[in-house]
Every structure is written in structure tokens, then in C-alpha cells.
Amino acid sequence: MKRIGYIGLGIMGRPMAENLIKAGFELVVYNRTPAKTEPLIALGAAVASSPAELAGRVDAVCVNVTDTPDVEAVLFGERGVAQAEADKLNGLVVIDHSTIDPDATRRLAARLTELNVALLDAPVSGGDIGARNGTLSVMVGGERGAFDRCAAVLAAVGQTITHCGPSGAGQATKACNQVLVSTALLGVCEALALAQAEGLDLDTTIKVTSGGAAGSWQLAHLGPKIARRDFDPGFMVDLLNKDLNIVAHAAADHELPMAATALVAQLLREAAQHGRGRDGTQALATVIERRGGFEFGHD
Image (cartoon, rainbow, N blue to C red; front, side, top):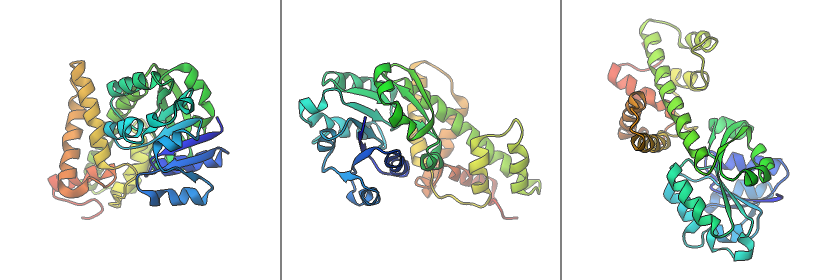
């Protein structure tokens, strides 16, 4: 694997693509909004006019887009990856870093197999900080052989890279990850609300609790943002809402009760309804503020 294609240069995609360049890969990029390719061009990346053209020029294609229909469009839509010449597709690997439905992933993988293309579902966790630092956790489903072939590509963007099983296993693992992320975030919001009501210094509370059994990524990284009402997005409310819909569908298929996750999803929807959809997930705290009649950091 020497030449890698990258499709989708958003909050996560851009720094991940930059890390591939830093690792020495030749990069070809495509983005629906061409202006987003400019920072990558400045670092030496080439630009393709379509996913099909990109696929014809690389050994592997990384995809990092919003939702299941977006992945399907990139792969099978007009001028999608599948429209590349057959000889160019033979042996190609698609690494999908998007977070989408596990069942849809399995269907997409089956369609690509007919074209001699392997699909690795490889969603990530670690937020924009992990994307910038190359320290993401990458959970991968798909053929073991394709996973092994792409080991260096995955190592360029992640620190913890795990083959979770066959196609769809990466996405299923990500769904579990989002249950943990979202429920922990609600705990952070409620704990800090109680701390403020009790007259405690929020930064001190975060420091003390982060060092014990209550410590979490959400507390350490988003707790300080909540304390100073910084709602700039690392990962947006709308995207976590989308992910929890995936969780809800999977849970329904297995008739699993998911009471805590359902509550967080309800509160995130409320945040979006009040204009916080494109804010960071820590804007969940604004729902607690509104219901409690206070603002973090204010008496």
C-alpha cells in the first residue's frame, strides 16, 4: 500500500488524511466541497474529480462521510468508486471510517465483493483530538487478509487498532462505544450541575473526580468545556444523535432494553431542537441548564 485515496475531509477526515501524508503515503483526495481539499493540496496531495477517478489511482480508498446513504453514494452512486475500470478495482480495499448501520455495511461489503473489492468497516473513537494526534481507537470488521494488508494505513491514523470480526463487526463495536460515550457524557453534565449547585469549583471537581473511579475521557476532555460553556464541535450533537439511532435499531432487532441510552438520545434531540445540533456533544449540558434554570459558571 503506497498510494491512498481519501474521501470526506471534515472535522475527522482532514486530520486523518494529513496523518497519512505525514506517514509517507501518497494521497489522492476527493471532497464534495472542493475548497476542503486545499489544505491537503498544500501538503502535497493530489485531487480527483470523482470517487471513481480516485479509485482508479490508488491501492486503498478511505471513506469518512456522515451516514449510510452518503457511504452508499460514494461507493455506488453516479461516478462512485464502483464505476472505476474493472482492472483498477481488482484487489482494491475500501476502508470505511464512517459510522453507519452494521447491516448496511454487510450489504455494501457483499456488493463490493462481486467487484473483487474488499470492504473494511473501520469506525473510530477519540474525537477530533485523537484524529489530530493520530491516537484514535480503530475498530475494524471485514476479511482478516484485507485488515493485515492495511495495517500500516490504519497505524497512521490510530493508536489502538483491533480486528473485531467479520464484516459489520467494526460498526457493531462502534455502536457499543457510542452507548458508553453518550451515557458517560450525561453523567458528567449531571455531576457538574450538582457541583455547581453545591457551590463547588468546577475545575477542582473535575480534577479530583478524574483521578478516581469516576474518571473518563468525557470528564477529562469535555468537563472543562462544559465548565466554561465552550460548545465548539469536536463531534457534533447531530452526529451523536445519528449514531444513537443506529444503536436503537440494533437494540430493537435484539429486543434489548436500553433505558439510559434512550434517555440520552431524547435529551440530545432536545438540544438539537433548541439550535444546538451543530455544536459539540458537550452541548448536552445546555439541556440540563435549561431544565435546571441555571448556566454553568454563573451563580
